[in-house]
Image (cartoon, rainbow, N blue to C red; front, side, top):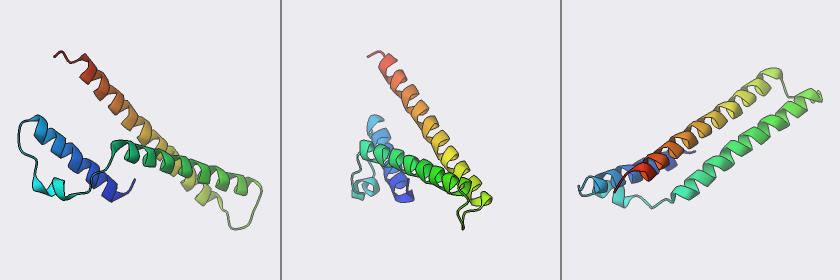
Length: 107
């Protein structure tokens, strides 16, 4: 996920928070282009998937003994893929918890 996508998502969350609190939204967040949450989520999942696939491909190349692939690069690639997957799972858990809290809120 790029920094600009994160900034845009944070801007949208701040705007939604301000509107929920009954305050007018700041003009700065209105100037930012609208980003769909589903697009950001899909993009993030695709990035995690591509990191895992690249890591697996590098691991196969190392196992086959191809030149230019060393163990350090393979291990770093595997750790990056693992870390990005764990981060995605934690974000999913937070989203599920937030959804459950909203669904349990009595109107």
